[in-house]
Length: 294
Image 1 (cartoon, rainbow, N blue to C red):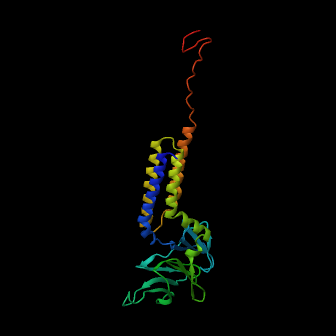
Image 2 (cartoon, one colour; image 1 turned 45 degrees about the vertical axis):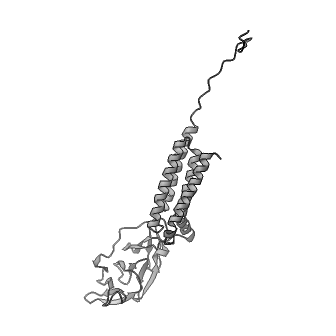
Image 3 (tube, rainbow, N blue to C red; image 1 turned 60 degrees about the vertical axis):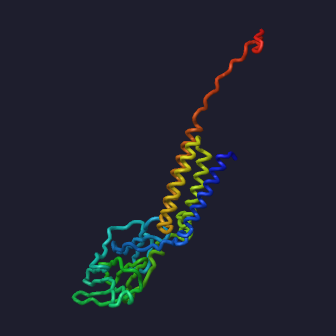
């Protein structure tokens, strides 16, 4: 191994060890998973729909329920939804066509926060007052409500990662919609692994070695080393500040672009025809160059 390459590898290793040592304390605070949650609920075409931010999944997705919120399946297409408008601070109200209305709201008793808040679902028949139908054990606050216009017994309220559905007898049951909308365990493991600073560190080393081996000039090699270290360091810092989140797409796109550029430069260099060496004329017959004799 030549001396410049050896020095570069040693310097890179020392730099990476310094980064690991400097961020080890912050890394211990990183949340192992992102909780996910329900972002929206609505009703259309005989079904409830809930928009899910999944637990360690790739992108948002929708769930649909055609049985009043008891069971939920993935929805590939979502129509225009009817959702309850906010009727006040942390309060949502929706009504069915028969005049029955529901309201999901937060209640803060005297003495809060020493006394726990309440998550109330109230029901009002046409011409009647509001009656508390359920005090649901959830957190933090309600963020949406939807009612079936044709069947006032079907209601879904959402809070945090849960959906709360009412059955025909007036009882309420809970469904963990964030879990139902999340990917299988092996997909979550892949996402968690890609979305880690350890992978960022490995990519820094791999891209540096690839560039050193394939780039044609010393200047191009050092330029790549500098850019890789800067980008890797910024991603590492971003991950530390945001508790390990947000690196999934960066750890996919950044290496792909870098490898593509390196291979493009390498191919253009290797595909260029080499310059032919000038042919040397052979001495004429019977000519002796040292003596000049023929």
